[in-house]
Length: 150
Image (cartoon, rainbow, N blue to C red; front, side, top):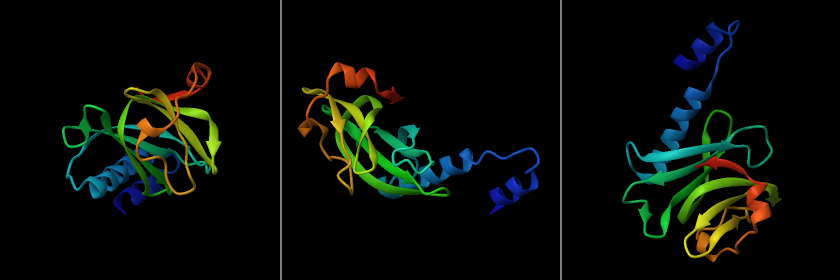
C-alpha cells in the first residue's frame, strides 16, 4: 500500500513498479522453496503474450543443484504478483527463449548434461520436469533464441 501511495504521489514524474514486482517474486519463490532468502538468478520475458514479463527463476545452492544441474522455476506475472507455473530439475544455463510456442506459451531452451541444448515446451499446464528427457534442438534454433539467463 505504501508503494502504491508513492506511485500515485509521483505520477507526474512516473513510477517504475519493478522493485515492487521483484519483491513479489522473492515472496513467491520463498513460498515454493520454503526458504526465507533463497539464492537465484532471474530472467524476465513475456512467455504467454499477455504483455507482462513472466519470470524464469534459476535456483542456486546445494539444496537445488546437483551434478546434473539446478532447479528452474517458471512464474507467470499477474501484474501485481506472480503465479507458480512449473519446476524443472537438472537444468543448466544458458537459458534462452525460443522463437517457437506451444499451447500459447513460448518455448525456452536449456542446457541438459549429456544431451546438450533441449527445447522446453509448455503442455497446457506446465513445462517439462526433467529436461534430460527432452529432445535436443539444432544450432539454428539455439542461435535464433533470446538469452534470458547466462
